[in-house]
Image (cartoon, rainbow, N blue to C red; front, side):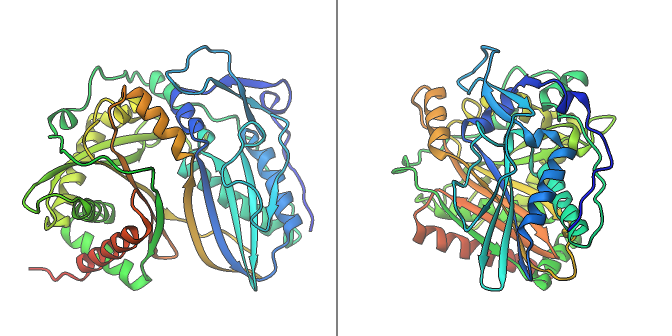
Length: 432
């Protein structure tokens, strides 16, 4: 293994200490210590010391990864933690082995780490990063760089390291582009009809996953193209239908659902921001559909896609950054909320020939209790229906959806099987 660094570091990152307060959106992710996992399962020899060196080089290239959070000085909380980002923060290069340690980053110590778990001839290697300093797109960029550096190292080449400044909070970019916070909730949410659903018992949260084959994924893409739609729209429509089927309500009762689709607003901003310019460029399209158990998921998906295009055209997607707290609490308080977060097509990581990649998985870990407490307090005791999460991505031509569901395990298994079956049914439909 060999390594080399071909660039000096900027003074703002490794010279004098860089410090700034977390923005409101960044503080929201800090509230629950929300942490994104990028995991590849490989077969072949894994050099842990080369991984450690690759992470060290990545931290040189993107110094925000060396940071940590300290008690803030802004005095602005909005019920959220008052924290400052400090770079460099004195954090160590952390590589965990054997599945030891918590699944969330301890942001008082480090904001990113590696987790290596061996299982026979296969090894799962996870790049783990705090959501406050990077959204799914930025984290995926760092993950790809990590593996590129690793491959150079084990093949005897010196990785090229190009230093980057600390990414900025999204609110700053929107202010620079003249985007102002809207005074009230989106019209769709104001017009939605609340449903009298029973309050959930406890804070049950069950996870699961579906992973289509390459052939099934290709069929779903072909179906979307034939309809003039997108795979995301078809998946979101299927989510709406299976969520309605879980509700213990009369079958003839249409229920308004809030389908939240996060949107990367980097390309929307002109000139377009680079991936590493901003921590969390997460706008949002607040889709609303009225669903029955036998609703057509294709039709619901088409409506959600039309609403998304409308929000992109009007710039309303930016309110997902500026009004995130209101959207979570006051804007849709008694409407069931489903989040469909699409990471898109994940580019294959670059690995040495000695490693074969068998799988990729993306997921988020968070403290659900902290979120529940915040919502209960912010909603003044009125229950907020923060419900299911669907994390959508494609790797190696295979569509995956990781689900987090507010159901007990048995109900969640039935829900996941029904969801997968509905997607396959959509993919297999014939044109009429």
